[in-house]
Image (tube, rainbow, N blue to C red; front, side):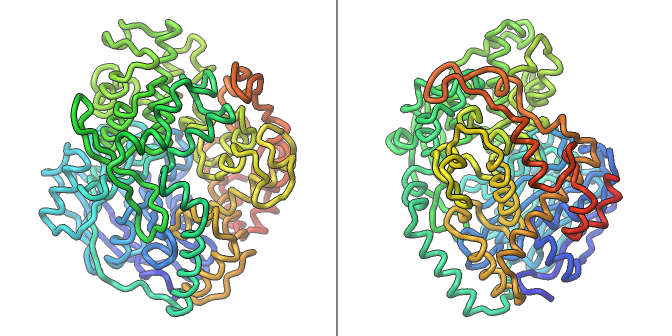
Length: 623
């Protein structure tokens, strides 16, 4: 057997309560590695076209990667894959912290949840054993309460991944949270509403602990090579910036190029940016910095507000929270933004979709599309710091107008009509992250083509794009110019997308991709797994996984028409700032992207491309 794996995947039938163990053969592992890649292989093979994402026929697949839990830098991540209730397409969420390491060392590589339990349950894995236990006591509890109760019951060393009340109530963008204890305060597998899939199965939590050793083919060589990469990261500008300011450093970077989404993407500069940036966070509410497992950077924050309405101590707001609940909602109060973040973690909500949905409601209210009669008396005004905090529990509990917001931006636009579709800021149903692609055109192409919808980490283009730097792959000033739309950018996007699939497949943090090359990953995987794994293999595996995700979406009805952007980004020029007057001219980039991908003019992978990638078995899924 290949090293780097525990050699056991759990198949948990929640309907009848049975648990079995299995493991794919080496050829499957070589082709998909683990994480989202291997999970997608199971999803497309084991589910039928057109299933209800919240029905028992959907499968919730949790998967670590071969690097997870080892000495490689930031190798502490896991992926969750299912059909998304938010988009009705391929859904994937990814999280770090320490849960993935603890789960893998409990003796397993992944879990395939199928069916639905008649009563609330949770899964306990410990020292190579797994069992389903009654979750009545923790059903209805917040994520921190659930974590505390399970630690008291099973031991403080046990780690917990769970849903909150939002997942139980099937909020379309409910998250799966882990590490929600008083030391780390939570990490989120947030996107695509997979917490609601978990809730639909009456599955409350996954508790794990173990001390089993992860097998490594060449332990000493692996240790040396991993330490070498650790040292590189420790000496990098990436560490210097993120350790000091966290991801909030992106506030200034986006503001300076005119790409900080403000008041639901009405503009790209925010007058209150200096009040919510990394410096402001450090000077006001920062209590501590926190790393995930094996992380040399520690980009995580712990924030503390000692008094007042927003009194709290928890995970500090990431850039995406600051963008979605801050500039997107016109709020420049860090305490309010931090409290909204804290509540999203407690109730189990994706902060990006939640903040975007609130911003959309604010613009609808501003334009008179909805009124206080619709909202139950709530005035949704841009800049209202109290509204962004007070509405979060209502969304999670589906109380009052919160029940409407719980459906997400796409469905609200369908419900409200009256032109609101023009500024419903989502792609394929997934709300956009906090980067305005009118200021960085390649980001628009990335949003439009991402397999899970509006996604900033399928291909991390906005970093170099917003900085207007030449890309890592092509040293060309025109390609590196964020505001230019040229065909060459399409091949850059493809290369990024392929590479980033591997990070999710092996269980590593995408920040490491800024410092480490394909050759670096190949060296680590070769010494870990005991096979010759090259940079070419690295890229080809990523391309294979990306195409398989695309096949799933096409099978579920996605077409070229879905590879688009909100009309606002295509038609409304930015009114001010460094990117004033710009829109995204998507079609020329999209056509060249399809060509570089080896897809037909409708965006469908050709039979030849699928065969070339070893996906000939998937041809029948879409032809």
